[in-house]
Image (cartoon, rainbow, N blue to C red; front, side, top):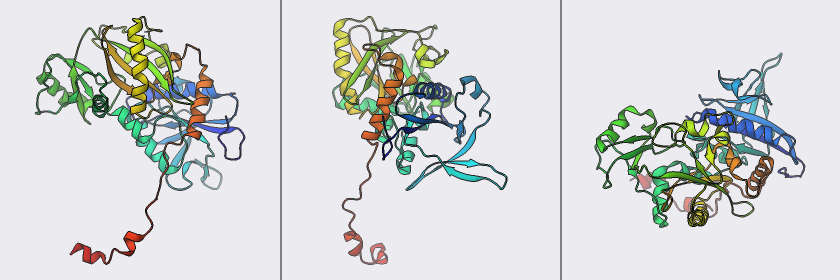
Length: 380
């Protein structure tokens, strides 16, 4: 894989962390990616770009372990600035005998490993687009669709894909037409953080005042205890490919698949308890494999995404799409096996060949300005 304009090995920046409830999991994914790319063909350099909980940027030393991020910034980290505009990018601030100096980081492709928050909702992607940087994973638009549970649900409905009814939860608003019990979820969030099961609508509204994860918005949908999770990964480069189907397993007494079920382990999502491949009827597997590419196309999936379904073993409901899944869903590619470095090299190749956005000024030829007359006249 070569990402440099003149050919030659690529210089990679691995971006992880961020001001998100999933900050810690993002660190795990970033460290896994940096380790997997070390020594991979076509890679000249790997730099770790850490986004702190407070929104600051640092380059951290190579070879760090997760525990070195527990107390905050690892020793030996270098402050960075992210500069927007033509020729923008990451700039290192290095100290010397005669004061600090700034040095641009020469990077060809960024691997985005940020889960949740501004790293996965399109905020970071929009900034990187303005910087003119090449990156893996979702575009601004597809990231936003994946993060907004209400918009995603509406999109599935317009495509006639079966999903549970889901509406916005507003304190003092109209009660849902479907009966309880209910699941209350953050409208913008993932990984079961802030998700609660309640018995009635009044309890759901009360959660708006007590659950900090619902401050940006919330959705409500029916809770059906017989439903279980089924997940499949999809990538679209160089063509559409689907992984094995997994059934995540609950380890606690909770009514839903909880955050601890997914991520609390030595390797994050890759070490979570699961049934892989899932033991489900052939008809259900066929349906998942038919619907998953439709969801990916509707959401303009780029990179590797994980599509989450709910089922009772018979009926199938589209639940959500995770545009930057934990560990980049590396553990799902088992048939045929895809080594993690190979998966990453394909993501890097896609990032170069399929840019996240191309700005255009077509039609802006000055004709409107030449014929505008006086601004004062237009205000009269």
